[in-house]
Image (cartoon, rainbow, N blue to C red; front, side, top):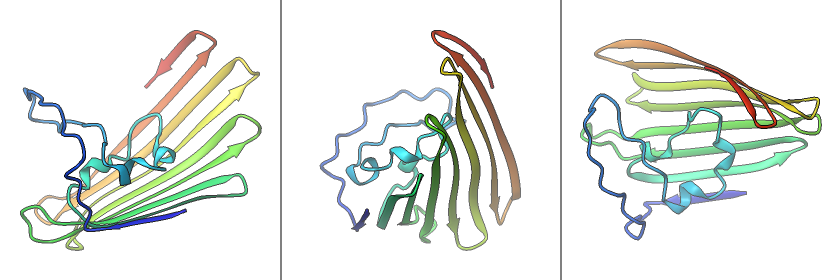
Length: 175
């Protein structure tokens, strides 16, 4: 499936509820309400949220491509986001692969890239899996790494690891 939009008008989208911000260190994560970014993007869902389409604030244009090849679901979302204050546009690319392993297990990978002026960027790469063991247990695993660079600050790196074992009503969670 291929969807695209050029200079979209999101004025008809329901406004966000007002929020009081006390901690200015972290951005508010608001739910996505724009139809183009809602439809067919459930494949980007992971145990920990790595894809946040609300950061594409003012898209000049965007395209989504999704489908299934064999037992592997594939999705791509690309957008050109109008620069806020910098006068330069941001290129945003998201790629997700998610494959079936056996009858009820999955294995996936994600890559996100946001580039501004060639030197400034944010990239995230991750892998996740859900493995059903013996019909009673489910093991969720996830690992991700991020790289962020600006001309002023240089590169920064980060990582995320998550494991969760669940059994019919009982949970053991390690993060």
